[in-house]
Length: 70
Image 1: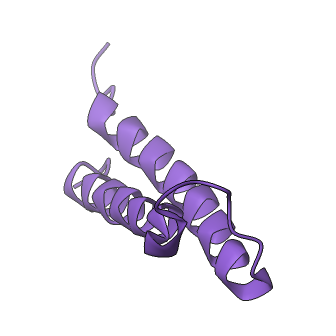
Image 2: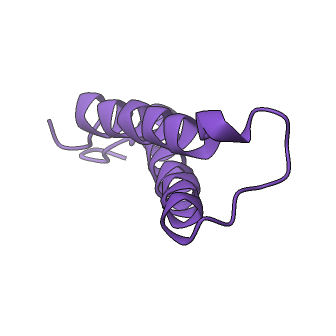
């Protein structure tokens, strides 16, 4: 197949990480705004905000680094 373009699997991993990061970050921000924190030992550290932001940044890195058509 001449002229076919392959899309790296890392691009799709970046999409997944970005989507999950936005969802987790959104939930963490909703927890902070509404004050309904989960009943866990370290709730004051706001883990969903940190993990969501980390996943979103990593996903965006993969999206930019492995975007198709570069």
